[in-house]
Length: 399
Image (cartoon, rainbow, N blue to C red; front, side, top):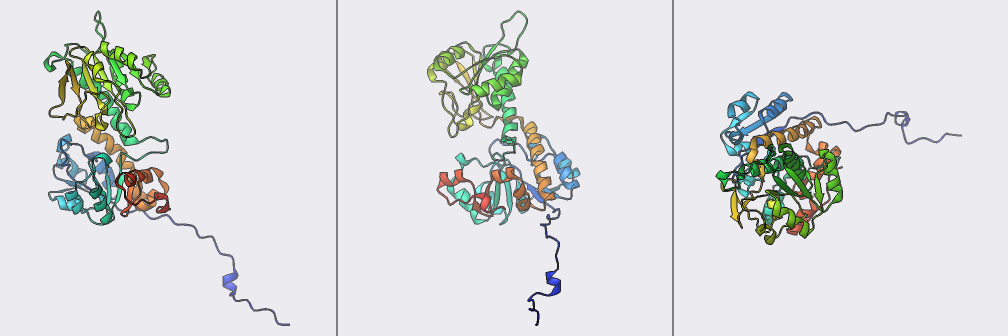
């Protein structure tokens, strides 16, 4: 009896090794860093040391001439680090990866090549619908560095800038208290035989923590208000000192503000920062007292707060000095730039090692969380809801 004939050859029936996915080879990145044109913005995304590390790993970096002037990084320093210095803005924006602090303007987006990658802040509240439509039309992949969230639930760049803002708020207040700034002539600190200055901090987050650290280091008396007992307990644990804390109760807060020399607003809300210090509370504060409302970038937590600028930073209301400048870290542009650069550089090196952003984003969830456009497809639900735009979950696109 004839045996059945198999439709497969002998070679096809032999066992074969399992085929595994091969990781993409290391790729060369072409990075452009344009000069910031936003009002009073001096920071830059990469320091010369970061550029040196990137170029040593085979990547190309183009820096627009003068981009580092605001932080005292010269073109020569970048050139010696291996960057190409360009005097043509269009050449910088022609790189396939663009690094910016502020979101690019519509005119700057016109210079970006289709399918490029953009790293910058997003600042949804200051944008218009057209901005996102133009990005989509160019099929740009855009990552908001202020939305990047690591595996521990921390926003690394936001946290770093909040640390700067917290420390800076006390330094600014201490300067405004002097007689030359129409302050009350007190030194923010603790001098033998002189009662210590009193500082009220509203908010026990990162800004509040670093403001408390700085004020405590100077010897001031500190009182921190927050409606989260967990944050208040955590703050006391981190500081290692039993500071005075309280939930935000109007009567208690009003009494503390009436006796303080400095008040720091460090509360953040989901949309607008809630107003917790009313105008009546401010009226009852000491003449020459200082308010530094770090929350002003989201509306401010003092009812009397109004946005000011770095060039004209203070207003006087009810005898109280108000400092309400958004984006305080740009006042210390070099420190902020080095901090941002230290966070950006490992991400860029990892993207290069993985063979590109797409492959890197498959394994790095923090990049996915920061991504709000993927090849022109909107992947951020908040933007979609805010501007009534179509939205696609990033997990359906990157796999």
